[in-house]
Amino acid sequence: MVTKKIAGRGRPRGFDIDQALTTAQALFHQRGYDGVGIAELSKAIGITAPSLYSAFGSKRELFERVLERYAAQNGSWLPQALEQEDLAEAITHLFHQAAKLYGADPNRLGCLALDGTRNCTDSKACAVSATYHQAMQQLVRDRIHRQAPEQANILANYVTTILVGLSGSARDGMSAEALKASAAIAADGFTQQLQ
Image 1 (cartoon, helix red, strand yellow):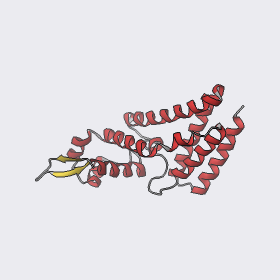
Image 2 (cartoon, rainbow, N blue to C red):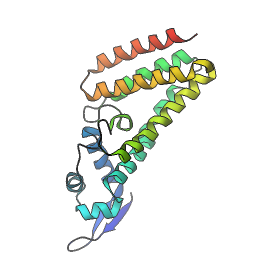
Image 3 (tube, rainbow, N blue to C red):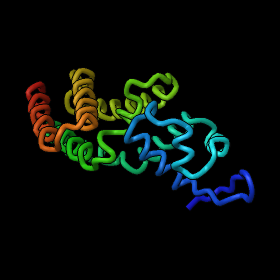
Image 4 (cartoon, rainbow, N blue to C red):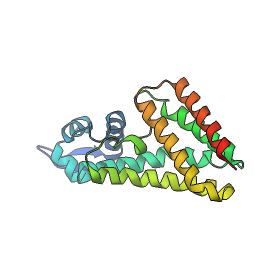
């Protein structure tokens, strides 16, 4: 546990960075980057706004730290899903895992990296999210390229579009059953496109 002392009014108090990131992650995941303000973040974390700025620099920098943590804790499922030898089976597994994970926790629907800045007005926060989106797409493209190099770009775009759609649909309240059914249809579509 990382604890940092932050001076405020009166005596300094212990400040748990990990707990602050957990709290901020939950708020960003529930309502997106634009849906959470500094005052709410500060109150939820239990510090003043100046202390939040002192600890993280800005709301965007806090969001960046949250995304780093989110990717480290939750990002391993994607490369693991792509490990299967057969490409169609790998993508089918990927879509089913996405549908399962994106709808698993009613308080954290969808993917924070894909959807945390949906409709966001902060271009720098959007750029932070875009780096994760691009890394995911490159990982998928590289996997497809091993088996279907001539189709790698178009199929990677398709896979990314489906993942974004599943994430957004989960955030918008689509049921777990409907997400799974959509994932199955998308997997069939991917398989049919393989030459």
